[in-house]
Image (cartoon, rainbow, N blue to C red; front, side, top):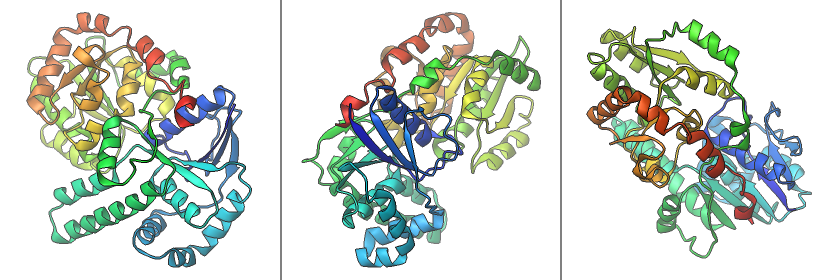
Length: 408
């Protein structure tokens, strides 16, 4: 039995890829009888394993403070950073002063930055980063998408700051935990981490996801609320409304197959910055009867929405990030034992050889996505049978059960 100390400034009031990964890692370790201490701002602790020891950080860092802290850590002296954030540093000394471990595991981008800051101030002995994102790629993508010179300049500066900070955070860590070998290779080409252990922990399913029972009453409520008819063919997307999420591509692909399949309906579960723009497209093209925006729902309700659907689609557009990781929405979709459609990214092809788990399409190719949707509807019965054991495979092969062997 080992002792693990984890850090996250997340308050866990909203679910997302980051919180799902944290639940999975922490609960798996606690389930295996390891001592787990979690320093966080978690408000609701019901979904955490009861054996986890929670320590309240009592430190709120606003988005503006986060940007300032990370910018100063990237370019300024340690003394200036400490002066600007003196009260927060004092609280961090109180929290971690008696930590009975040599290493702190840091979950998200802000946490990784703070881990570096704590080490530089000799408050902790060492830290390890959990890396499941690439900030430089995100800022580079936003820079390329920007239309104004001012906006391009802002994202260029953010990209440079992220690169400078990443160099410090990676090279001063004991090691970093990557979600794929491809992501490790990406960072190893940029920073001097070759002497550190290579630790790969892919995005996986939490054991609780496999144990969750379907709420049949909720399924009935959803069917009634959205007037789902036996003749409907429901296509479901569940995720964040980001530029790279491919939601607009999916809307257009459904639009293309409506003449052949007038009973198709697209339900979009989630929310985000681009929702208004995509709703305008739906209205402009008179698709209101075929495309519905459902808004956010608790993660625990996802399985009920999947149950009313016939086809689950992860329509991400072509982007480097998706080539490097398997998104949680794909893993969640596999649990439903339904037909799943996902882009043929290198990360997904590692576990979906010969379409054994899901149908693939060429990312950002709307015509190919429409073709795959059409195939899924026309061959619905045979494909449903083909993928009827996806849940069993995922729960036996794609969970965090052996996470402890990877973190030592």
